[in-house]
Image (cartoon, rainbow, N blue to C red):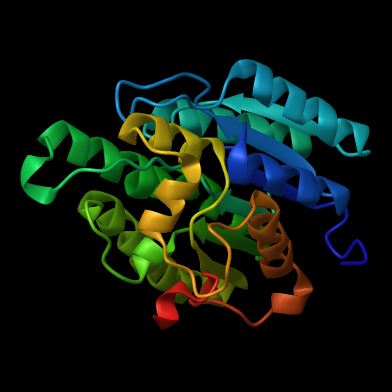
Length: 268
């Protein structure tokens, strides 16, 4: 990208591992300073391992080794008071925010009639409400500086139904609604908003889902996806590269739109 983003500041949620980590490092390689947010603890639901304090600390160290500043932000995206405090700390420390990658999310299987209300609420609260809570704190800074990019990490499940994933799909479809609505609200301030829609990604989340389902990661990926291209999944780096592109001036007129990384899944 020829360092087109050098000197900007990105806030990435769910940053400790997986897609968030890969994206943080990709942006750092472009000269972007990083505010890396993660809950850094396991939750009762979904039950697989989430990011850790050690992963978040090592991520920041790796980013700084690339010549940028990086700070860890410890917050559950559902906790608005803590998110508010941590976003304010990021702005005070790094001076501004230019890019928001709403990446924090969970996934878990369950038939609609078998889901508990707690499972439904947790899925929607983290994946959808959490994105709104974080953006709510960032948007005023974007409006004030009359610039900024929000990238919401949705899924192919945000563009089609998926078996035993109704609550996950609902949360990811909801991100499209946020994306399009925010794009309309924020266009007068030169702020862009887009969503990205990966097929299955080779991350610790996929490994965790496989273990809980009693399957291998490849079996979980192939059952959920069915890509046209002969790959069971894409890599976190593929998502990271897309975020760098969408955040850059090369995407300066992309807003309110969906960027698909589906390996052909949606063409079936």
